[in-house]
Image (cartoon, rainbow, N blue to C red):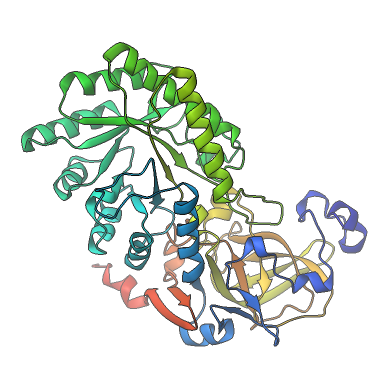
Length: 472
């Protein structure tokens, strides 16, 4: 039953509710697309992940906590690598026609870097801090790509001195900085030029990154990308490898990638015709969407690979270009579904005829995406099974903000009560990365679970941690 059909049962919710109404049985059912592979509801009704009951995890590690299904995370790394045929050897002695870079900005810590490296993926970072984590975890520098629209001299110097495999240059000013650093050291760092290809991706304004009116990249239509490439080739200090294009995040429509590839490869052809140089690489970025609700229908990696590789091959044939090495950068698509956040319910407030507010012990400090992007999430009572009729609920946090919303609309059991554990799936991408200490709330831990064992890979912050930075 659709939400508008359910209005008579739950008040006139109109467009405020989800697009389907759960039956009492559905409230207890886990939709596979929303959850990591090993998450199950046990016979006692509580969720288990990696064979461990979430009630035991809550008792051991506290709430809120990010729970990472390590088995699922590794499987998604392998799925992308297999689908795209990334056969690059760990020492890069045998290059593959495609390379998969995990986009570390989605979620990064030393344990995740090691998992990524062990599964054979390369890694993208976009700040000196992310680079520091990658190097501290032992990721080979030549398997690291360095992004960012405003890389400082110190960041570029650190990347060059570390031997980072590629730097994605984002502006003329950055090209000047990097050229000066490289010339002083007598080396030729490999670079890709990030081109703004003029795509209006069907996503939120703040995560669409290939249209003209935003901060990233060098304009293709305005000639800035062409001028930057000419400058790099003329000076001969940097090793120009190709063009980079990233159209945005949470993208489901592959047609946008087709237009992006056509325009980026058109620039490759222009470079060949004007300079006699065939650029050997192209990077189409990432931004592949995941399922946050049942309305999301992400493509599996094999479908993405089939589509993107076909697009590149067809465009190269049309332009009489040799097929360049293709790179992609999935982040959210790997870690997003592999993690959920576990909360404890506190206050439950019924607003007659509208909804039930379910307050949890976290909020916008551990998941800002709902407030920032109007992102939609799902939720389920994780500590028990319920036979109660479903009610329209809004999951909110403990912060002193009316916009402190975790899940805007979800049907939860009508008997949801203080002390229940609530799980929100799909929180691996950008939730811990964007977490804050708003209202001086310490950030939650990240607990990795696999094969019946659990370990903390990012510890919970304490009030001592907060006070340690306060030198007043």
